[in-house]
Image 1 (cartoon, rainbow, N blue to C red):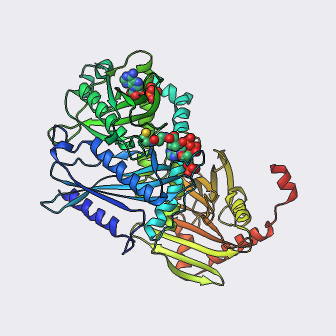
Image 2: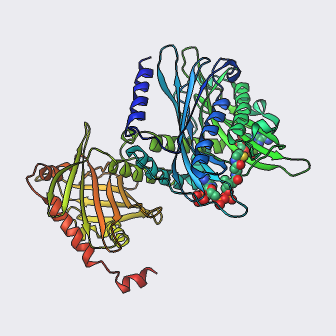
Image 3: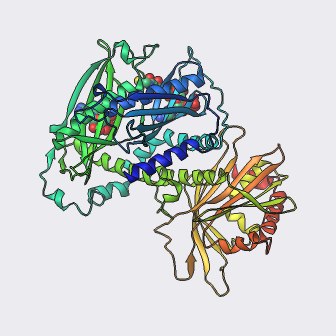
Length: 586
Ligand code: COA
Ligand code: ADP
């Protein structure tokens, strides 16, 4: 009960923050009272029905922005936090966070309301991508979303990061499956479910064959929009139905759907299609199971068209609402064995995504161990943490010297600062120069040494940075930093260089150095004009950085000013690309 009321408060804060009287023009709301016809045999709203309502609300929001018919292209991971009972009200709110070219991200919030007590609580949040349907052979160019409130600005900025991640989702999965170390750890049993599984060992293994489901649906006009395209939500609902049957067959009980992994609609379906839906349990973990579902369509003699594949995680709750241990499974040879292993890979990705991305920034543990399989999420987290820090609306000007300003935000757990000024250097050039950390010692006396450890890709590098000792006679500090760069996604966006600590097994802390940690730092560079840029340096000061800045904030020194002047001088001196360097990099 207590947790529900705190959820309600969070939800209300969430709604109120920065919204004021403003109503987003693309915002669409839907409220539905849950009737027995929407519920399963436990009198809970069926998730399939909820997915239909969510998709419909989001589609209407997308169409309101686009002014033309839109289709669901993909939906990011969804975590269902609560079930909803018959008689309760579901409130769904959707709005377009950002439009790209022909696609746009729609944010969907689902909450539940108890009419008797008046309580509200959050059920889930989702991000769906809708694509404006082509007119003939031409792609539609959507108008941009202009964020008005503070919250809309944050969502607009983060939407670009989420898009980047969803477009490479398939490749991440393939890379992980092909990764030799990962394959070895699976075959050695290294990442198969771990401790505390004693009760599980006593359970007899269940053959997955027993859980296999195949079902057919005929797409009728009520399942489609006015363009005769099948609603994405309807397909998801049919997929959830067969997944639920497969999960129930494994546990002979009522399963509860907890997550749906990010998925993509590969191709459209229309009225008259026959949809074949197939599901099977791919693997069970200590307290949960992964069910895979595949949806294919055909008409008449046509070959099957692959529409969608989704992976859903179910739990089975005991009478106290705690997840029950599930029996291990016996996969069939070949396909079953492969899916069993791929389910392990997806579990890893799911956990990486959930704990690195979906958690609030402050809940992310410091210095997550870096490895190629979680690189994408760490990079996302690095950039989005900096964007969130920059977007705080509680920045106050602490001091100003000439044209260099020092701003701070004091929070219960941390002190954040920002140093900002304009320089007569084009934004792109400033970005190139500042993002090369190996040259930072040329202007920043705090960077005694900076070695490049791993060039992950053209946007991300891992460096080891050595800085002087903080107190007298103290040890010299070192940091392992992931530097993630982003070019503007469209005009008006800034250049971003985000810095965050990671741990690397190859570079453990040593006796000689104090290992420092950077929670969140970096540069945001805006183009003011073709030849002038505004550079802001941000840092959420951890103990290693605090002593450098606290004297400035207290007004006892202005080292922020001298460091910024040195940076500005370095940029001016290197304003023009050296012809030698340019030809060397070509
Ligand atoms: N997630 C999110 N967006 C994606 C995506 C994914 N996995 N893959 C492609 N897109 C986006 C692209 O980024 C592009 O956006 P942009 O124009 O803003 O840059 C947009 O989709 C179109 O991409 P394009 O490469 O031109 O087209 P495509 O041939 O890949 O087609 C769909 C993409 C979504 C239109 C196509 O796969 C489709 O029709 N799917 C079925 C949609 C549907 O009918 N859904 C309802 C249920 S069946
Ligand atoms: P993959 O087989 O590589 O996982 P698919 O897209 O073919 O990918 O299928 C997605 C999921 O759908 C599978 O993981 C499996 O759980 C389920 N599935 C696919 N084919 C069948 C089938 N013939 N019977 C039962 N379930 C199936």
